[in-house]
Image (tube, rainbow, N blue to C red; front, side, top):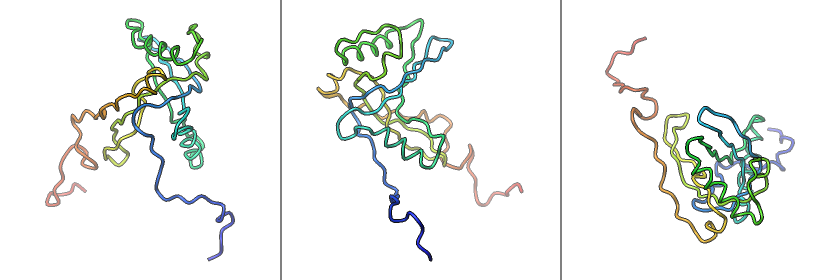
Length: 184
């Protein structure tokens, strides 16, 4: 076998990956977009970890994914709903941003959020993988002030899937016995 060009400089893939620690992290907003919905607005907030051992976590994830998929999406996302009939959660989000950025005052221009810090509370959320198995992903559950994060926050309980109708990988809603006639 001939040696492949670039082999010596290639980073080996061992199946291991960096996992974001659960709990609080100081984060920085990179980009915000707003989409109008029937109920109000949806803010899509792209962010990364701003300091500590996981600083730049989502950028590293993105760069790794881009190597195999040129259409890779930014993985560090938080979605904030702005409901016309209930602004409490949005106001809490904005107050956390204002408290985390000395002198910043929200002026209803989402572009002014770029570069601002916030505290993110991260927990695990279950999802059904492509093979039908249940796995977990670490997500930003809540936004708090940076000061609250630095004082310490509790790790949220795992967000479990609602299991109604789930039958496990590969069963497609019914049990199959090897003794049954197969319809083909």
